Image (cartoon, rainbow over all chains, first blue to last red; front, side, top):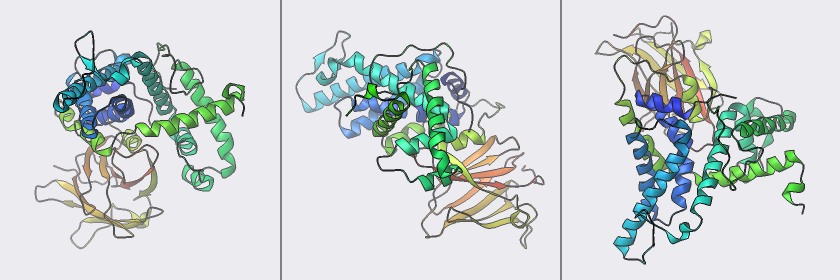
Length: 211
Length: 196
C-alpha cells in the first residue's frame, strides 16, 4: 500500500504526462462526478456523455487548475454545468416543457433548482469520506469495505483468510480501523460522522499529509 | 428502536459507515463511462516530456487494481525464471499459481528487433479467457512498461533496460472497489540481459 497522493501531486504528475496519475484521479472522483450526474434528469446515454465530458474538461484544464483543495468542488460545479447544458439540449430536442431560467443564463432541471446548494454540500462531504477511506488504505480499508460495503452477511472465514488474520481478530481489528478512520475524518473536518448529508465541513489546512 | 444518537459512539459510527458504504456503491458509474474517462490517459501520456522520470511504482499500480500479491514466482529455485532455459536458450517459466486457478507459461526471448521481450499466456483452469494487465518493473518497483492481455490471455511486452520483474493483475483499473484482484509478481532475476 502506498501513501496517499494529494490532488496536487496527481495533477502535477498528469501535467508531466504520467498516465497512472490520471487513472488515480479518475478513480478518486468517479463517484463524485457520477453522483452529480444522477441528480439530473438525463437520458442514460446522455449521463455517460456528461461523465466523460467532465473528465475531458479536467484534462483540458490540467494546466490552469492550481488550487488543488478546490478540485472536488471544481469537478462538481463543472459536471453540474454540463448537466444543465445537456438537459437544455434534451429539452430542445424533445420539445418538453421549459425548465427554470437561471440568472446566469443557463437552465436547470426544476427538480434540482430548490435544493442545489444543499445537495452540493452533501456531495462534497461524501467525497471527503471517500478520501478518508482512501487515506485509511491497506487492510483497514479492505476490512471495513468488506464488512460494511456489502448487503449480505460477510463471510468471516473467507475475509480472515484474505486479510491474513485470525477470525477472532476481525472484531478488534474492525474497532481499531474504525477508530483510525474517525481520526482521519476528524482531520478532514468531518468529525466522526461518515454521513451523506448536512452542512459542508470546513477544509483543514494540511490535507497534504498522509495519516 | 433507539434513536441513532442514543447509541454508543462506536456502534453509531459502524452503522453510519455501513450506511455510507452501501449507499456509495450506488454511485459507481457504468463501466463503459469509466473506461471512456480512463481512456483519456493516452492524451495525458502524450504530454510526457523526453527524459522525464516515471513516477509510478508497483504499489500504486496495485492500489489501482485494489490488488494483493498472491504469489511471487521466481524466488523458488525450482521455479526460477532466470537460469531455466529451453532448447533455444530462451528463459522460460511454466507454473501454476496457487489459489488463483491460473497457470502461466512464458519465456523471455530476444526479438528480431534485438529487443528483449517477455511473451506468453495465462491460462485458467476452466479454459475461460484470462483478462488482466501486466507491468514491467525495475529494481525499485517503478513501472517501466504496461500492457493488457489480449482476448486470448496472451501477452508480449518489451523488457526495457533495468527490467527486474513483471507484475500481473487479473483486473483492469475500471473494476469496482470492493472486489480484490490477484497480483502475480514474476522475478526476472539480476542476470537480465539488457534490452537494446
